[in-house]
Image (cartoon, rainbow, N blue to C red; front, side, top):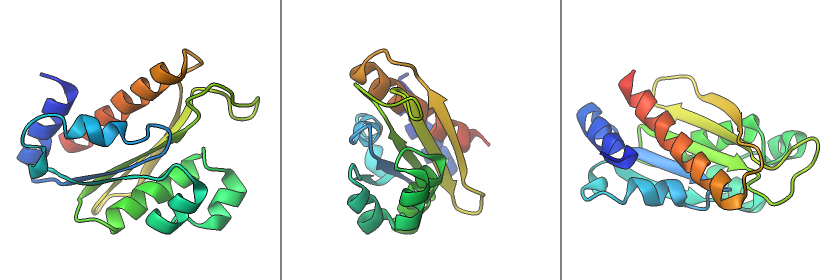
Length: 157
């Protein structure tokens, strides 16, 4: 069983609906979730907000948060997830924002990805994973897999 199939089964069992808010993964998480047949039972929507303007306009990320922390931050990931949850019919939302590469800086290196998970009736959780610099495709794939794992874990609680 794939992670997406596991997520589908867990969300069905929990009666959950899922939304995604993605930046560096460019919709890969939503695509993975909707790969198995029957995903419409549990998937509400996915939003790709690659630019800061899109994060603000579509998810309600505050410009002050972007200015203070930058797009690749737990604070922005948190607001992305909360915005996706608030603007959807979902009960669970995951957000991904990071630097897939190539590039980055000493302060925000390639492979740094921030995640957040927002759920109805629970505090929003956010954390950062340093995937290193294995290349753009590898960082994006790892971030997608991690996001699916977060959703599965949240449904197991």
